[in-house]
Image (cartoon, rainbow, N blue to C red; front, side, top):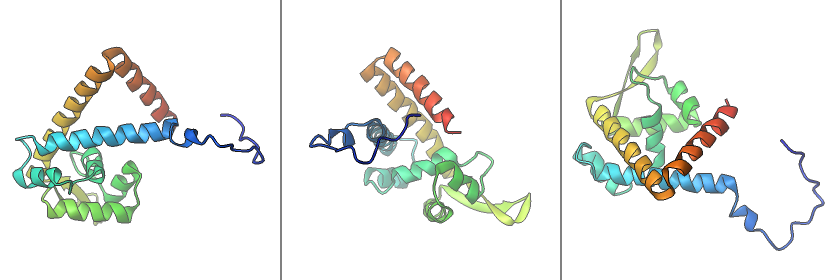
Amino acid sequence: MTDVPPTDTPMGPDTDWRRNQLGRLLGQAMRRFDDRVLYLMAHQPQVPLALSNLAARRQVSAAHIHITRHVGLHGSRLSELADSAGMSKQAMGDLVDQCEAWGLVQREPDPRDARAKLIRFTATGLDWLHAFEWAVQQAEVELREQVGVEVATVLRLCLEIYAAEGD
């Protein structure tokens, strides 16, 4: 890590660095990837029609993808989901409520702690999860086709290294 530059350094008229910096590009790439996954899910016959319609009308957002990415196959506690997704418990609770209303997940008593609840996929939620898996794989194929296999491989390795450094 480098030292922070002095605060008296003039910024100058060129502020392009704010629009063209790695963090912003990573964010744009993630939004583009998630948007493509949602589009594919909206047009996937495996996805229950009501959920497909929600995705097509953009009622399903990247936040809903967090649930799909983070709920364990044997269930997860709300606090685990929030930590894993980098969200507050309250925000994750609201998301779980919405996904529960859509029939994707259900809350069940946690056999390890009577006070706690586990969030588990329903049968519909598992259909959603399988469609999500297909859509992610398809979006990755498209990315490899666009940037080339070698670049996609290097990109993946670099992102894995960078993400692991934060753990």
